[in-house]
Amino acid sequence: MIQSGVLDVVRCWIKYVETKMLKTILSKTSIIEGNDSSGKNILITGASGMIGSALSRTLLTSGYNVYHLKRNKSEGPFYYLQDSDYMHLDPSIPLHGIVNLAGQNISEKRWNGKVKKQIVDSRVKLTHALSEAITKLPTYPKVFLSGSAIGYYGTDETQIFDENSPAGYDFLASLAAKWEAATEKVIQVGIRTVHLRFGLVLNPNGGVLKNLVLPLRLACVGSIGSGRQILSWISLRDTVNILKHLLEEDRFIGPLNFVADQPVSSRDFSQALARSIGRFRLPRIPSSLVRLMFGEMADAALLPSANIQSIRMNELELQLADPELDSALNKMYG
Image 1 (tube, helix red, strand yellow):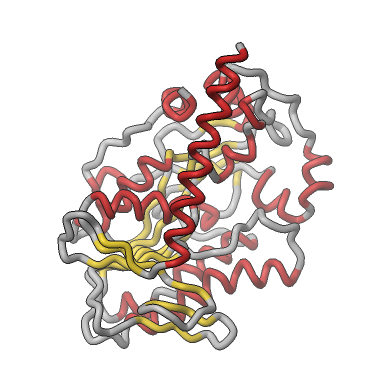
Image 2 (cartoon, rainbow, N blue to C red):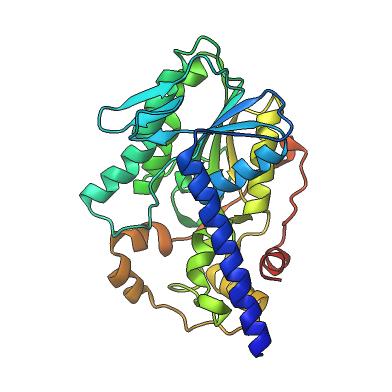
């Protein structure tokens, strides 16, 4: 038992150091060159985030040159000054593709009017400035992959949503719709554009899983609210593989739901997580307590249910590496 606990500590520390090293590298340079350059340059916004950093590593090993967008510093070939809403894209560096993942974490702070505006501006305002700057480049990129979320559809316990479903009406649905609309100028000039409607992206070192598993895997958080609400998820590994494929193929356009084929209830999710770490799960967190802790965000993002599926994933002719929740979690925590 003691040896196992020590190994867990060592593994956690190694992963922590690796993450810190990558973030340090990204923060100090605007370009990271692959070992076997293919001559294709990729710009990533939000490159220090969970998805952006993982995508950077994968693209580098595939021979791409990876640039990232600096924020609020007028240095390097690609930067954005938020206060003046100025986006600079170096016209001397031809870009094969742009992956727009920037956006403030919606669960970082308790929502109020100011925080909600920051959440919107970090996505919509930046994407609008980026889109306008792209259309002024002497050579257009081949593809523009721009972030969105399955919150686009709103919430409804009685329906199943797919890429053909209309937008919802709540704050997160309105946010996603505005986020996607901010790419209109890029679409108008004929650049292949894909709206990345991310589900719950699973990775033990970041995102929701990092907050659900206690240190040293002593236990995991139990179901939230009723436990019946549906969660639509996908592994980080599949997310990155799909993004890389979208950069390389030349046909897919429009929205894509990043979700596996097996949505699960909050209760089943917490049970699967407990099995994968070999520990118990904490008691269910009542809805009233969730609302007390998170305010408006509770009813917008934590307690509602939305069954999201993808009818377009087959167009990519890709097989998900992690189609089933139990096996996906076992790989992550094995």
